Length: 447
Image (tube, rainbow, N blue to C red; front, side):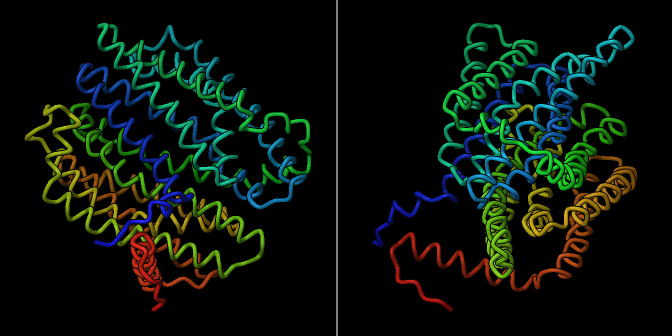
């Protein structure tokens, strides 16, 4: 029997994977509790609130998340402090503007009868405020590639939420309002821990500069639009399905949509480590390394996703029934999960095309890419759902959208880097063989 070298697991890739795995696992547990304890109406309201919060959060993350990694990673100490201080300054300013917008919406509450909208107006502002510090902390830690610290902070944030929900459920106090309250409290806890441990460099705000702020703004305006459009791309299915098929169909779609987290775990992990590595390589003017990282990560994930999709074709009913406590047995939920998992095979190449465009300082092209995908997805949703008259139109529209995005990104990326899809697959296959060889202490053989 070959001996597994456990030390090989102590690297940034495994720690990032663990961090995303924890947040996704806790997310699935959280939604399992919601499906078990809440009515369909309350589950729908929670989903609507989370979608709305995600859109607000994408404004701040989109404007500064990628920019922080791009300009901070690999920078010398003085420049890094200048960038981080400018990021804190802008993050606080953007959050204050969102609070003003949210506060203005309170004036309309007496004229609104829609329950999901009322809940969102009441809670989204303070929730976004509570997540401000740990958002900046995570950007910095990601740029520094301190994935072990990210792992612990995510454990604190998501673990404390699950514990709070379980206690509320045990005490018979678990409701939509208490869930929203403890979601806010656990955000505050994580932010406080990060600040007290000095993981975010808040003091660097005094070292900000007008030139760096302008530089971040000029870059961020495109990444903001891209990130916001990406969130709208994910949210548009929710709104169109609700409009065309009703909340019952949305409830069914929400199950496989949440289970796709099983794919997002490695995808987010590789994007996280890949972005910081590519940013460092680009800042050092090593374009060959940027190309290699793109092919390596996108190729490995594509190959890994193929057997996952095949496995879910045969066993999709198991996770669907576990997550929904059997409430969606016999519905379209399992088949939807099968279709969405096969679409997921295309996720890595699409995602890394966009990330690489941002890193090589072409955020405008990535913005156009996402805009094209958004328009195509809206049209495809209406056509496919309207033609089929059921939720199966959603994954079909998703396949059309992904194919369009990959083609657009592939054509434009090759204007700056030499990237071929066969090379991506070949490189990914080699890297997986190399990884397995290293884990089992086998001699590396370069083919």
